[in-house]
Length: 434
Ligand SMILES: Cc1ncc(COP(=O)(O)O)c(C=O)c1O
Image (cartoon, rainbow, N blue to C red):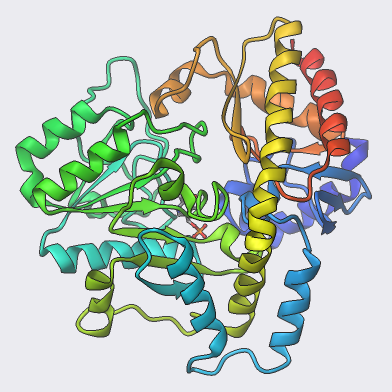
């Protein structure tokens, strides 16, 4: 613990004034304890004890371009000198909206919010208004924010006997009213036959099917071939809307997100994180026919929506992402692939059951004997989380910071040197947890 002495002192102070010493519950479960940081630039993060880390947490995903990207900081600096909030419109928000419409397949119109949680709420309200129905289908292990009506079945207790048929979702926090789960149905992900069965039974009551395009919040799981297309077909057949929650995948899997990567265009899609390079911004995009309802009878509001700072950050981030025909994506692909292959090679050599799956920009590690994780239950029942936690602490000791949930985010700021240093640290850390 010597290495984190100052952090620990601050953590003890913090626990007296901040519940759990943190301001977002996910930060509580960060072994060895929630650290304090002082500065960050590019792929590197420095804590209050002066330890430097190569960062694969990347602020839980937003920092696809790396920390403190100079072009984004310059743009924000320049824009904020012209004011912060107009309670009116600016050219910036129009520019960013037009960029969305140009890049994102489902985006005929856009509305901006501040967090992924908020725009998911807007998507659900809009879908219910458009369809006149209330039921929303979603999937085990998917995270769509912390609000009462979405913090459902994100990490539900399951056993080998838990039925696979549709059931009411489970609330995940004390204080959530049981009625928060009313009007929601939940199924395991990636099993189209189950969705078909459910639609045959009550498809005409379903307003919205809400899914991550790639299941980044549990296991970096890719959709099975035909799964998303199957959801699209069922929604069309029964008059429901399809919502891809691209808060993680948006502008990370490519300029057109998961919908471009997997070739399925939803009716609605939500964005956050990477769209603003570390500043708070989020968007709901969708078909004009539906989105126009916000100009008619569906309310979506927010004091800070499309504020100058957030929009300047997004305008600069999107320009960087588009530069040189998406060069950053090619770079991230190369860095992430080298990491995935390198980690697999080391685990193989040490004869460790370490599964590496996902895509180069967002991949997942777990100690498991399964050949692949296909859905939440595989992760919940067959992965050794305690061992992974020990591994993350050993990595931290060696200057590598990852999220304990298993996901690794790669940024445009990671270099070949970082990759080589990371692989050396991975080997050392794995030897400690053999
Ligand atoms: C897929 C998805 N949707 C929604 C959210 C909520 O976003 P926010 O934390 O910005 O409210 C998250 C956050 O991680 C997410 O991963």
